[in-house]
Length: 285
Image 1 (cartoon, one colour):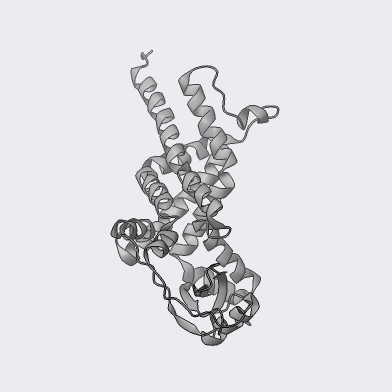
Image 2 (cartoon, one colour):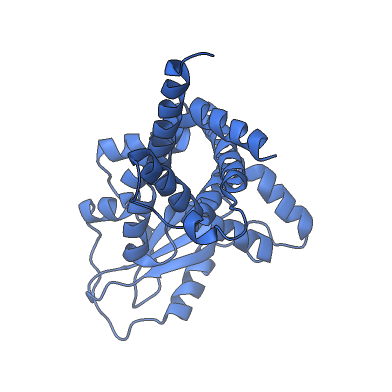
Protein backbone atom coordinates (compact mmCIF):
# COMPACT_ATOMS: atom_id res chain seq x y z
CA UNK A 1 0.00 0.00 0.00
CA UNK A 2 2.80 2.43 0.85
CA UNK A 3 4.61 1.74 -2.44
CA UNK A 4 1.38 2.16 -4.41
CA UNK A 5 0.58 5.44 -2.63
CA UNK A 6 4.12 6.64 -3.29
CA UNK A 7 3.68 6.13 -7.03
CA UNK A 8 0.29 7.88 -7.02
CA UNK A 9 1.76 10.74 -4.95
CA UNK A 10 4.78 11.06 -7.25
CA UNK A 11 2.92 11.07 -10.56
CA UNK A 12 0.11 13.31 -9.33
CA UNK A 13 2.73 15.83 -8.22
CA UNK A 14 4.65 15.60 -11.49
CA UNK A 15 1.52 16.05 -13.60
CA UNK A 16 -0.01 18.86 -11.54
CA UNK A 17 3.12 20.52 -10.17
CA UNK A 18 3.04 23.64 -12.37
CA UNK A 19 -0.66 24.14 -11.62
CA UNK A 20 -0.06 23.81 -7.85
CA UNK A 21 2.69 26.43 -7.96
CA UNK A 22 0.44 28.86 -9.85
CA UNK A 23 -2.37 28.38 -7.33
CA UNK A 24 0.04 28.76 -4.43
CA UNK A 25 1.64 31.99 -5.66
CA UNK A 26 -1.56 33.66 -6.88
CA UNK A 27 -3.45 32.64 -3.74
CA UNK A 28 -0.89 34.33 -1.52
CA UNK A 29 -0.80 37.38 -3.80
CA UNK A 30 -4.54 38.11 -3.59
CA UNK A 31 -5.21 37.48 0.11
CA UNK A 32 -5.37 41.23 0.81
CA UNK A 33 -7.20 42.17 -2.40
CA UNK A 34 -10.26 43.38 -0.49
CA UNK A 35 -8.26 45.59 1.86
CA UNK A 36 -6.24 47.04 -1.02
CA UNK A 37 -9.41 47.81 -2.99
CA UNK A 38 -11.02 49.53 -0.02
CA UNK A 39 -7.89 51.58 0.57
CA UNK A 40 -8.01 52.85 -3.01
CA UNK A 41 -11.77 53.51 -3.05
CA UNK A 42 -13.10 56.34 -0.84
CA UNK A 43 -16.60 56.05 0.65
CA UNK A 44 -19.20 58.82 1.05
CA UNK A 45 -19.37 60.63 4.38
CA UNK A 46 -22.36 60.71 6.72
CA UNK A 47 -23.54 63.45 9.06
CA UNK A 48 -23.54 62.34 12.72
CA UNK A 49 -27.02 62.63 14.22
CA UNK A 50 -27.57 61.13 17.62
CA UNK A 51 -26.28 57.79 18.95
CA UNK A 52 -25.01 55.07 16.66
CA UNK A 53 -27.15 52.02 16.14
CA UNK A 54 -26.02 48.77 17.75
CA UNK A 55 -24.71 45.81 15.79
CA UNK A 56 -27.98 43.98 16.42
CA UNK A 57 -29.97 46.91 15.07
CA UNK A 58 -27.70 47.24 12.01
CA UNK A 59 -28.06 43.51 11.33
CA UNK A 60 -31.83 43.84 11.42
CA UNK A 61 -31.66 46.94 9.18
CA UNK A 62 -29.53 45.13 6.60
CA UNK A 63 -31.62 41.95 6.53
CA UNK A 64 -34.77 44.04 6.28
CA UNK A 65 -33.34 45.99 3.34
CA UNK A 66 -32.12 42.83 1.57
CA UNK A 67 -34.53 40.05 2.40
CA UNK A 68 -33.24 36.45 2.10
CA UNK A 69 -29.68 37.74 2.54
CA UNK A 70 -27.68 36.96 5.69
CA UNK A 71 -25.26 39.33 7.41
CA UNK A 72 -21.82 37.74 7.76
CA UNK A 73 -19.73 40.67 8.96
CA UNK A 74 -20.13 44.27 10.12
CA UNK A 75 -17.17 46.66 9.83
CA UNK A 76 -17.49 49.80 11.96
CA UNK A 77 -15.00 52.62 11.44
CA UNK A 78 -14.23 54.69 14.57
CA UNK A 79 -14.53 57.83 12.42
CA UNK A 80 -18.00 59.26 13.24
CA UNK A 81 -18.46 60.41 9.63
CA UNK A 82 -17.78 56.99 8.11
CA UNK A 83 -20.64 54.70 7.06
CA UNK A 84 -20.85 51.12 8.28
CA UNK A 85 -19.84 48.38 5.88
CA UNK A 86 -22.03 45.28 6.08
CA UNK A 87 -21.09 42.12 4.20
CA UNK A 88 -23.91 39.77 3.28
CA UNK A 89 -24.29 36.39 1.67
CA UNK A 90 -26.99 34.52 -0.18
CA UNK A 91 -25.85 31.08 -1.29
CA UNK A 92 -22.63 31.65 -3.22
CA UNK A 93 -23.34 35.34 -3.85
CA UNK A 94 -21.74 38.04 -1.70
CA UNK A 95 -22.36 41.76 -1.49
CA UNK A 96 -20.80 44.58 0.53
CA UNK A 97 -23.31 47.30 1.38
CA UNK A 98 -22.79 50.57 3.23
CA UNK A 99 -25.32 51.89 5.77
CA UNK A 100 -25.79 55.07 7.75
CA UNK A 101 -24.79 54.07 11.30
CA UNK A 102 -27.21 56.63 12.81
CA UNK A 103 -30.37 55.96 10.81
CA UNK A 104 -29.85 52.40 9.52
CA UNK A 105 -30.55 53.56 5.97
CA UNK A 106 -28.74 51.73 3.15
CA UNK A 107 -26.54 54.14 1.20
CA UNK A 108 -25.38 51.86 -1.58
CA UNK A 109 -22.94 49.11 -2.49
CA UNK A 110 -19.29 49.05 -1.57
CA UNK A 111 -17.45 48.41 -4.82
CA UNK A 112 -13.70 48.53 -4.19
CA UNK A 113 -11.51 49.61 -7.08
CA UNK A 114 -8.67 47.11 -7.43
CA UNK A 115 -5.48 47.49 -9.47
CA UNK A 116 -5.73 45.71 -12.80
CA UNK A 117 -2.89 43.34 -11.93
CA UNK A 118 -4.72 42.18 -8.78
CA UNK A 119 -7.88 41.54 -10.77
CA UNK A 120 -5.90 39.46 -13.26
CA UNK A 121 -4.19 37.46 -10.50
CA UNK A 122 -7.55 36.83 -8.82
CA UNK A 123 -9.07 35.67 -12.12
CA UNK A 124 -6.06 33.42 -12.69
CA UNK A 125 -6.47 31.91 -9.23
CA UNK A 126 -10.25 31.51 -9.48
CA UNK A 127 -10.76 30.63 -13.13
CA UNK A 128 -7.33 30.17 -14.75
CA UNK A 129 -8.39 33.11 -17.02
CA UNK A 130 -10.86 30.79 -18.81
CA UNK A 131 -14.16 31.48 -17.06
CA UNK A 132 -16.37 28.48 -16.28
CA UNK A 133 -13.99 26.04 -18.00
CA UNK A 134 -11.12 27.30 -15.88
CA UNK A 135 -13.24 26.98 -12.73
CA UNK A 136 -13.99 23.36 -13.69
CA UNK A 137 -10.26 22.73 -14.20
CA UNK A 138 -9.65 24.25 -10.76
CA UNK A 139 -12.01 21.69 -9.30
CA UNK A 140 -9.97 18.89 -10.87
CA UNK A 141 -6.80 20.50 -9.52
CA UNK A 142 -8.33 20.66 -6.03
CA UNK A 143 -9.14 16.96 -6.27
CA UNK A 144 -5.51 16.33 -7.24
CA UNK A 145 -4.37 18.26 -4.14
CA UNK A 146 -6.69 16.11 -2.03
CA UNK A 147 -5.07 13.00 -3.51
CA UNK A 148 -1.61 14.42 -2.75
CA UNK A 149 -2.61 15.06 0.87
CA UNK A 150 -4.02 11.57 1.45
CA UNK A 151 -1.26 9.64 -0.32
CA UNK A 152 1.41 11.86 1.25
CA UNK A 153 0.04 11.03 4.71
CA UNK A 154 0.19 7.30 3.95
CA UNK A 155 3.76 7.53 2.63
CA UNK A 156 4.83 9.68 5.59
CA UNK A 157 3.28 7.45 8.30
CA UNK A 158 6.25 6.42 10.49
CA UNK A 159 7.07 3.10 12.03
CA UNK A 160 6.70 2.56 15.75
CA UNK A 161 9.27 4.56 17.69
CA UNK A 162 10.09 6.89 14.79
CA UNK A 163 7.44 9.56 15.36
CA UNK A 164 9.77 12.23 16.73
CA UNK A 165 12.10 11.87 13.77
CA UNK A 166 9.14 12.01 11.36
CA UNK A 167 7.84 15.38 12.60
CA UNK A 168 11.12 17.31 12.88
CA UNK A 169 13.58 18.77 10.40
CA UNK A 170 17.10 17.35 10.65
CA UNK A 171 20.08 19.43 9.54
CA UNK A 172 22.53 16.63 10.18
CA UNK A 173 23.73 14.52 7.32
CA UNK A 174 23.53 15.23 3.61
CA UNK A 175 21.62 17.99 1.84
CA UNK A 176 19.23 15.38 0.48
CA UNK A 177 18.45 14.16 3.98
CA UNK A 178 17.74 17.71 5.15
CA UNK A 179 15.44 18.32 2.18
CA UNK A 180 13.66 15.03 2.80
CA UNK A 181 13.00 15.76 6.50
CA UNK A 182 11.87 19.31 5.57
CA UNK A 183 9.41 17.95 3.01
CA UNK A 184 8.15 15.35 5.45
CA UNK A 185 7.83 17.57 8.53
CA UNK A 186 6.25 20.58 6.78
CA UNK A 187 3.81 18.28 5.01
CA UNK A 188 2.83 16.75 8.37
CA UNK A 189 2.35 20.00 10.30
CA UNK A 190 0.36 21.68 7.54
CA UNK A 191 -1.55 18.64 6.29
CA UNK A 192 -4.84 19.71 7.86
CA UNK A 193 -4.67 23.20 6.35
CA UNK A 194 -3.70 21.84 2.93
CA UNK A 195 -6.59 19.39 3.07
CA UNK A 196 -9.02 22.19 4.00
CA UNK A 197 -7.74 24.27 1.07
CA UNK A 198 -8.15 21.27 -1.22
CA UNK A 199 -11.70 20.42 -0.11
CA UNK A 200 -12.77 24.07 -0.12
CA UNK A 201 -11.32 24.35 -3.62
CA UNK A 202 -13.56 21.48 -4.72
CA UNK A 203 -16.53 23.22 -3.11
CA UNK A 204 -15.78 26.59 -4.72
CA UNK A 205 -15.44 24.93 -8.13
CA UNK A 206 -18.62 22.85 -7.83
CA UNK A 207 -20.82 24.76 -5.33
CA UNK A 208 -24.14 23.63 -6.80
CA UNK A 209 -23.44 19.98 -5.96
CA UNK A 210 -22.59 20.77 -2.34
CA UNK A 211 -25.53 23.16 -1.95
CA UNK A 212 -27.86 20.48 -3.31
CA UNK A 213 -26.57 17.99 -0.77
CA UNK A 214 -26.97 20.56 2.02
CA UNK A 215 -30.48 21.36 0.89
CA UNK A 216 -31.35 17.68 0.67
CA UNK A 217 -30.07 17.15 4.23
CA UNK A 218 -32.38 19.85 5.48
CA UNK A 219 -35.17 20.59 3.03
CA UNK A 220 -36.69 23.04 5.52
CA UNK A 221 -33.92 25.61 5.13
CA UNK A 222 -35.32 28.97 3.90
CA UNK A 223 -34.13 29.76 0.38
CA UNK A 224 -30.77 31.48 0.38
CA UNK A 225 -30.26 31.60 4.16
CA UNK A 226 -27.29 29.90 5.78
CA UNK A 227 -29.20 28.71 8.82
CA UNK A 228 -28.49 24.99 8.97
CA UNK A 229 -25.25 23.44 10.28
CA UNK A 230 -24.40 22.12 6.80
CA UNK A 231 -24.74 25.52 5.15
CA UNK A 232 -22.81 27.15 7.97
CA UNK A 233 -20.04 24.60 7.55
CA UNK A 234 -19.87 25.35 3.80
CA UNK A 235 -19.69 29.07 4.54
CA UNK A 236 -16.94 28.45 7.10
CA UNK A 237 -14.96 26.35 4.62
CA UNK A 238 -15.14 29.16 2.08
CA UNK A 239 -14.00 31.74 4.63
CA UNK A 240 -11.10 29.54 5.78
CA UNK A 241 -9.96 29.12 2.18
CA UNK A 242 -9.43 32.88 1.87
CA UNK A 243 -8.46 33.58 5.49
CA UNK A 244 -11.52 35.75 6.04
CA UNK A 245 -12.44 34.53 9.50
CA UNK A 246 -10.20 36.42 11.95
CA UNK A 247 -8.80 39.74 10.77
CA UNK A 248 -5.53 40.83 9.21
CA UNK A 249 -3.26 38.69 11.40
CA UNK A 250 -4.69 35.47 9.97
CA UNK A 251 -4.59 36.92 6.46
CA UNK A 252 -0.89 37.79 6.87
CA UNK A 253 -0.30 34.21 8.06
CA UNK A 254 -2.23 32.92 5.04
CA UNK A 255 0.09 34.86 2.72
CA UNK A 256 3.05 32.93 4.13
CA UNK A 257 1.37 29.54 4.54
CA UNK A 258 -0.09 29.85 1.05
CA UNK A 259 3.43 29.27 -0.26
CA UNK A 260 3.50 25.78 1.33
CA UNK A 261 2.49 23.92 -1.87
CA UNK A 262 5.34 25.67 -3.72
CA UNK A 263 7.78 24.64 -0.99
CA UNK A 264 6.56 21.04 -1.01
CA UNK A 265 6.70 20.86 -4.83
CA UNK A 266 10.23 22.30 -4.82
CA UNK A 267 11.55 19.93 -2.16
CA UNK A 268 9.69 16.95 -3.60
CA UNK A 269 10.96 17.80 -7.09
CA UNK A 270 14.53 17.98 -5.78
CA UNK A 271 14.20 14.57 -4.15
CA UNK A 272 12.73 13.04 -7.30
CA UNK A 273 15.39 14.59 -9.56
CA UNK A 274 18.32 13.43 -7.41
CA UNK A 275 16.85 9.94 -7.27
CA UNK A 276 16.23 9.96 -11.03
CA UNK A 277 19.81 11.07 -11.75
CA UNK A 278 21.20 8.45 -9.39
CA UNK A 279 19.17 5.77 -11.17
CA UNK A 280 20.35 6.97 -14.58
CA UNK A 281 24.04 7.13 -13.61
CA UNK A 282 24.17 3.97 -11.48
CA UNK A 283 26.36 1.30 -13.15
CA UNK A 284 24.43 -1.62 -14.53
CA UNK A 285 25.20 -5.09 -13.24
